[in-house]
Length: 231
Image 1 (cartoon, rainbow, N blue to C red):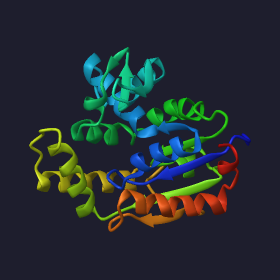
Image 2: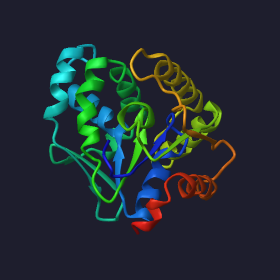
Image 3: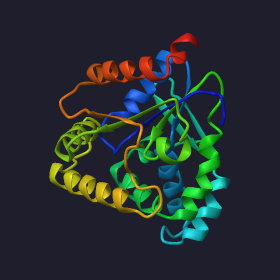
């Protein structure tokens, strides 16, 4: 196995794993992989290029061709580039998230993106955010954390986030979409959403970001102490 350490942070959307992963990577000075963004980018690219989201073979062929870059905008915020174009807002939309969940159920699509995700594993270490980081992509991760929260809490968080961007999102619709996505992700045949057997499960329903970070750092100090030695 690769000797470069990985911290895997898995869980459904709205649990705070993306925020925690970014903060953790910055704290440790490690690289970060947002695996969910890869599926969202593939869904966007397919839509823009007229590739059917039901055509598993075509999607799998398209995946390796994508020109994807993760970076920061002029204000230091998140910037996701597809073919040189900033598509961050489109990638983070609820609609794109639903499409990504659909295509992620295809075994050939998941296989096409496996090596691309593993290529992010470079020194001094990697914080990997996703749904199957600890179970499939990095089963040898030094620390595995699974964040969870009630569907109601996640819908409220997403509602606040979207409406903060002047998006008139319906709370009821968001709850239904999140619940449907949870069921689809948990019951897919390939890499279903579930905690790894050796993962630490943290319920973030009643926790704010600093509270989640405190719990996560406790786990890392215990399971991956070398993470703090590389700073």
